[in-house]
Length: 401
Image (cartoon, rainbow, N blue to C red; front, top):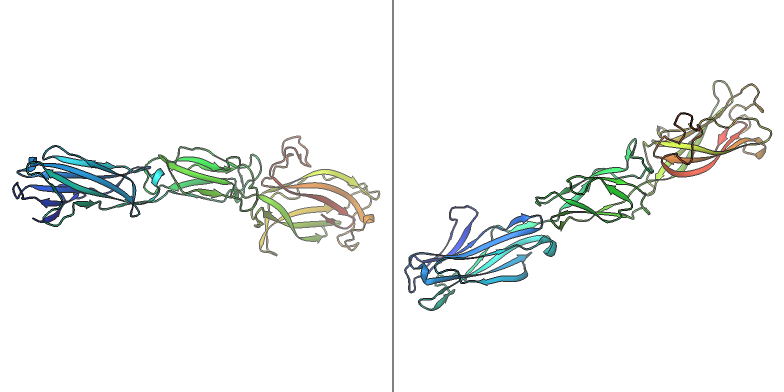
């Protein structure tokens, strides 16, 4: 009596067999057939085994089988069986389909216990005289991993209705490594649906758009998952970034060709995580205007002091530059002095005009871009994220914030 391993007609089917001679003939064989563990669909795996009897006296035997499924070496659920008896001299099989959403990822394997009863001679096997214990084991086993989500760029909230701003975007493309799950994923918000949107939920690669800034740096308010027939991916966390504040760098003063002064004020733009932003759009809106010390200097006609950040060689970084200037004009009282002539004094007696301005990052549209619109901007319709508001001072020989 010997134990053999054969492949039948299919290279992926293997079996253990034991030859039974008692009360029969030596060509009557009981096979324990086992198959590889496979992925049935995104949420189920499949294991199969059978007890099969062949030979001249196969009808003397009734097959039985019990199936056991394991994950990472530990049995899961209850055994299936004992199933039987099968028809005399026939086959008895067991199929096991554990659900991944219940048991989770891991390495799945199956063991089957193969028994048979000789109803003519009135005895059971095993024990088999060749030493086989009656167990068969799936081969190969199947390792299942949770799908993993990824994105392209960090999404920045740039203000209502603003999709992109030079190097920044409120949108990022999502994708998921299915790890062998065959279905199209179903996307959902686990949390944070008030912070963003998905342009599709039953698709391979939706576009996520940030619709609000994160509540704080590192809050990761948004949590996404992709489901494959009920088997969830790993959670994916999104921390919506956003422009947050301006950080003063320096002011440069010049004398224009026609005389007077020009002052350029430079700022860094910092995100909510205090990361310096680079190539992004900006705009300003003038909210109010006042004259001082008998000045008849005009209010600013256009809020176009800046519209884009520019690379600054002095700091080796991208900076916002706001340009202020006054030049001599007939009838202007008093006439502006050349830059620095008055020592850049900020004494009240040298203040000519003051303007309150509001700064936004994410768009060049300050609400005054439409024909006939207010060139100083419109605070009600300007686009972008407000990052600050401060006075804009015009002194006799320079400007400052």
